[in-house]
Amino acid sequence: MAGLIGALQEVLTVVQRLSDLEKRHDREFKELKDGLGSARSEARELDRRLLVLETRFGGLAEIAATEARAAAQSAASLAVAGELRAIGERIARLEGVTGTLPHGRALPPPGDP
Image (cartoon, rainbow, N blue to C red; front, side):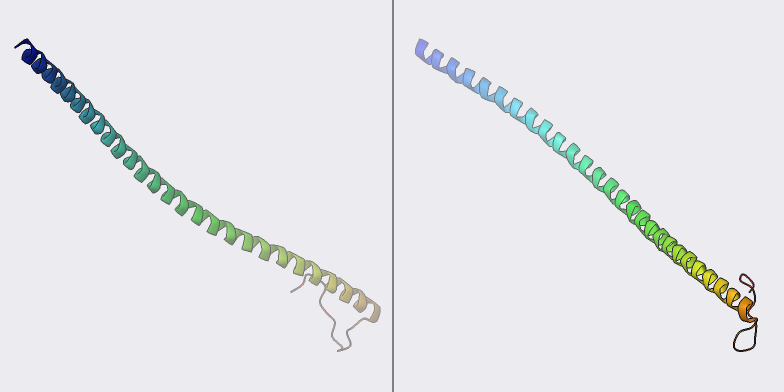
């Protein structure tokens, strides 16, 4: 009888240990599941933020390209204006030497429309 009681005691101990192990497993699984849900939420938030940043940087890149084109056009306009001024000055010097153009008309001084 003592052997049977000892065996029952062992079975009860094993069942208790299994029950404790199952509870611990359930608790850890719940923590893992909660952590995974939290990680998914953070990933969605990061994805949303990334989309916002990509949109903003896309707009900024477009603005920068527009400004660069405007600056290039400005620089080209200044270069052309400088060349035209130099040509006008040469023509004015030539007019000063000959008095008129070969067509018989005088050019207005540089800067006049």
